[in-house]
Amino acid sequence: MSIIFEVFIPASDYSLLLNNIRGGIKPSSITIRLRYNCLDEGSPITMGAAPDGSAMIWHNAIQQNRNVNIEAIELYYQLMGADDHLREN
Image (cartoon, rainbow, N blue to C red; front, side, top):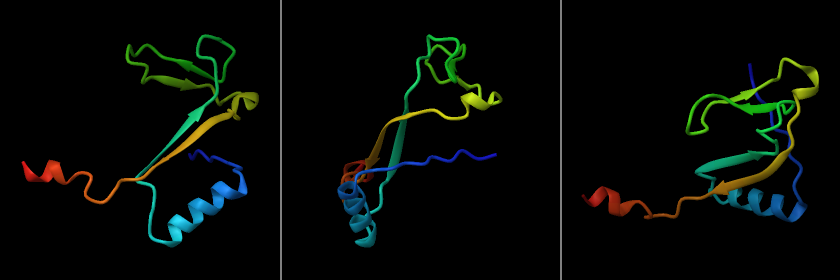
């Protein structure tokens, strides 16, 4: 099983990402925020019983629920030396 994200971004953003990767700068993490209404029982994604919100249920067995709109994509970069203070202790 796999989850595939198909994303279209403006050429200027893609160019920045591509230049960073070519320069050896890769994102340390990527967050993809999906657009859904967890209070709507007809939503493709609903919340489970976990009190911290970590139990999300994707109802992808239904063909119409296999697509979920992407609200935002965030790329995070770790600056060199940013975690040095953790190693000193």
